[in-house]
Structure formats: structure tokens, C-alpha cells
Length: 222
Image (cartoon, rainbow, N blue to C red; front, side, top):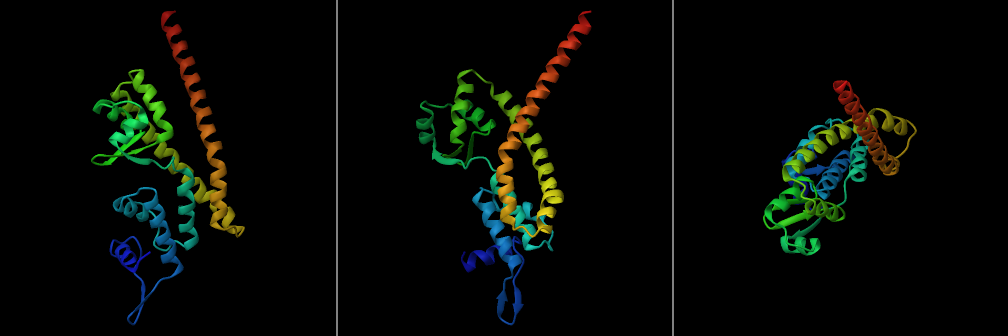
């Protein structure tokens, strides 16, 4: 990382200013930990404004080990890294032309993002699923509403899981002297189990809701 970048992050308030001794500026392990977190966030596509908001939630006196925990919690829970392509490239990958409404539906489903004009970030593994929904006439309005549901509940789950790790998992490993990398390994192994548990909970809730609706309908008819 260049000196210019370090100074830029400092002026933005993303990293504390160096410790001044005469004309020299000294950086501690705390500075390094925060710089690494900034780079990690940038690698996941966070804007500077989003990084500033994220870092605002980390106490100024957080130890480097605590900051490393934030890094460990980031990567394993991210969805696949999207592939950037032009509209022509997206349509070649889709094997068909896509009109504006279809693009809006794919964007509402979280499969396609358009961060800047003429360029798209595409979750390639999910694209066939989205195209299949388009072929079935899935309405854009429903995709937008579904996306809002996913975002709201996904945010709640993420917050609660992060709090669980912060208050229960990390203290136990920290007391045992385990490095932050051990936490990352735990999270990586927990991810598929968590996804399976969410799917099972969803299916169970859907079954319960279906039974409740049937019972309510039978009660009205009787």
C-alpha cells in the first residue's frame, strides 16, 4: 500500500492518524489491523461511504485482535464474488437478449447489479435460476418485494449471528489464546450448516403456515 493511500484513509477518518514524534509518523499494530480491514472491505466491493459507516461501529479502543475478528467474519459469509461484464457479455452468458424489464427483475432478485452505466456485476452461478424464472413469467413487482423480504430478514440474521460470535464464540477462543485465523476456520465450517439450518427452518415454517391456513379454512367452512 502506498504512502498516499495510507494518508488518504487517514484524512477520511478510516484509520487513526499516526503517532507523531517530531517529523516522523509511527503506525502501530492497531493501524495495521484497521488498514487490513479497510482493504478487506474494499475487496468485497464496499464503497468508501459504506466502509466509513461500517468502521463507525467499531470502538476506537478496539484491540487489533478484535478488529481481526471483523475481518474473519467478513469473507466466509459473503456470497460468490460477482463477475463484471458488459451488457453484451451478459447476454452472451444468458444465451439471449434481455430487455429492460428482465434486467430489472434479475437486479431485484440480486443476481445482477449495475454499479455503473454499461457494466454489470453478475452472480454467474445464480443466473440460470433467474433466467428460468423469467421464462416462467415471474413478475418484476414480486421480485422486488421478495428482495426486500430477503434483505430485511437477512440483515437481522446477520446481526444476530455476528452478536453471537462477538459475545459467545470469540471470548471463548480469545481466552484459550486461539488466533483470529481459528475463528475464520470455525465460521467457514459453520457456513454450510447454517445454510442447511435456514432451509430446514424455512421448510418447517412453510409447512406450519400451510397447516394453519388449512385449519382456518376448515373452521370457516364448518
